Image 1 (cartoon, helix red, strand yellow):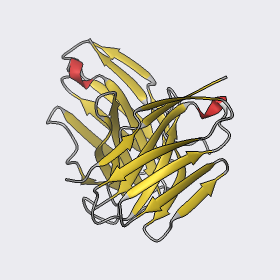
Image 2 (cartoon, helix red, strand yellow):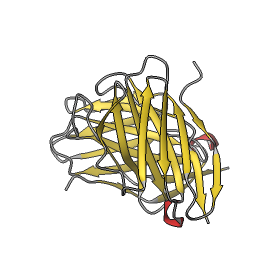
Image 3 (cartoon, chains in turn green, brown):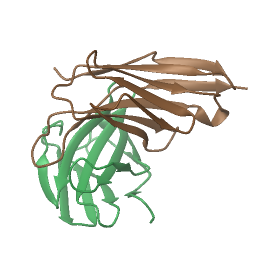
Image 4 (cartoon, one colour):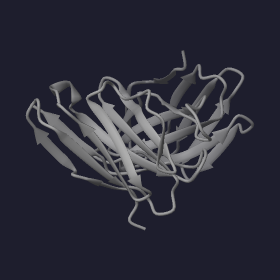
Length: 113
Length: 116
């Protein structure tokens, strides 16, 4: 198994631009999670899906952030418009239904100038 | 407020030495506690998962302990190796936001550097 796949690995964009991060979970996993990691705040859960349905998006910072999971093998996290304070590493993780072990992708390092 | 605090923030040890990392939490109700290892530039990888009824769990040279009464956990690394250099993150599973998946609450991590 290739594990959780994220793309791109690095993204540099200018303030105001739209950014789309992509994630392919491990095949057969029912839950998908989006996290953001910064030096100051560590890892923070943004949103998670069960069976493609968003369950808890209370961690999404504001309306500029949106996430979708159109099918069991693909999810996107979109930031529009992006701001310098969005610079961070964004991780996607997946797990089997319930409180199963979460497997993290390699992350996308986002830099907004 | 549900919180997970780790200490020390950073630690430098010599190769071959042992070390212990600490985690205190205020999460309630409590489901399980996990220790993750995160190498630079990579995603976190699970080392151990413990429920409230477990006191100790080992994974090779890594041994985690849990005291659910005092809400404390520790990760002990024996005979450290250069490859142990990483960030170690304590994660507590607390009240879920919905569905059957509990929300994970992350500590800010301990950065360990093992020097030759």
